[in-house]
Image 1 (cartoon, rainbow, N blue to C red):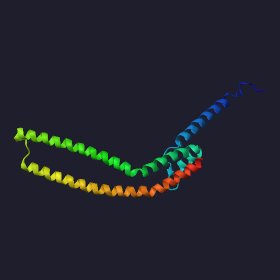
Image 2 (image 1 turned 90 degrees about the vertical axis):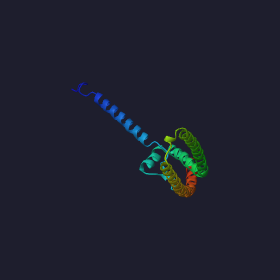
Image 3 (image 1 turned 60 degrees about the horizontal axis):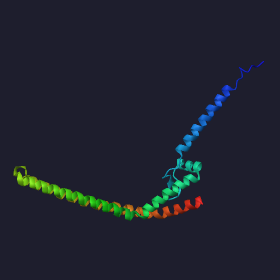
Image 4 (image 1 turned 60 degrees about the vertical axis):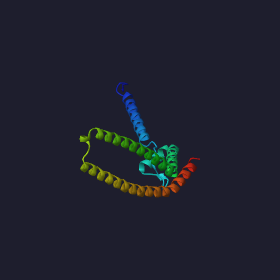
Amino acid sequence: MITPEKHSTRPLIKHSIRLTVLVCIVGSLVLYLTWPTVGLLKAESCMPNGAIAEFSALVHGKQFWIVQLGDIRRQREEAENWERIQADSDQRASENIEQMDRVLSQTKEQMNRIYENYPNLAPSNEDDLAEQLRERARRLNAEADDIELRKGMRIIREKIQQQLPALRKCESFIAQKLR
């Protein structure tokens, strides 16, 4: 005769609960790791970029494409407004440089007043010449940096102009997909 104590369903229930908890944890982890974030799309092909992105698109479907549409729109808007953004940035940089120049000029004036009152603290002729040469070197380095910066900006501008049609096409593709 079988007694209820020997064939209890408790171990089976415990096992089922553990399995359910494990499945929930693994499922949550998969959802978390594949949650759609920006940058999971190749704008050139408008396709998920890599296995994780493809899996995210499969798991999250429409939500994946909504996130990517927002990212592609942001990239397109930045590309279309790149010249203005750069002009604004250049303007702020120029204002900061002008402010620094004013502060440096005031500092030099203060130092000259100190030197007038305390000539023994004034730099020697050799010190002045060395500082003039350093200043000339700084200006030459700044000119060289400016040339390299303009070249880099030209390359970036060309790259952005090349990417803009792909961004527009991808944005349109995703918008159609979400309709």
